[in-house]
Amino acid sequence: MLTAIALFLPAPLRAEVDWVPVDSWEAAAAPVDSALADKDGRLFLLTPGEVLIYSAPGGLEGRIPVDKTVDRIDVAPAGDLLYLFSGQSRKVRTVSIEYVLKIDTSGSPFLGPPGARVEVVVFSDFQ
Image: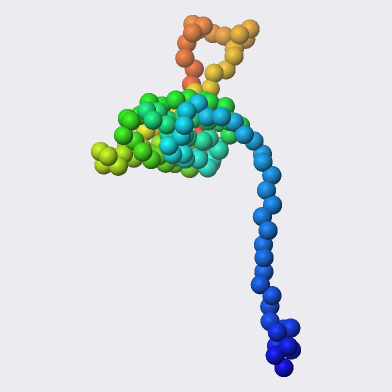
């Protein structure tokens, strides 16, 4: 009878994890903490004294100087706000981030001063 019961008991399930390395790159400095922006996949690495911003493929896009007491960071899902936490000074600082894209306009016709600043605004919530 025990043999019959043992045959009908569910066997323990064992899951396997299959993984493949996708990419590898070296950071400009040893990271203390990191945060990932959900919207565009930018990676923010906190290093002593600055935050390094990397694009999804691993290219360094920018640096933000921070106080050396900052020991944790977080980023808003859109990647437009960076939160800096300091356990030592018990301060939380919010930094607004804007990404500047340089467009090569050499050889293109233009009106106005050649070095004039141009801003392109995207209205993503337009109905």
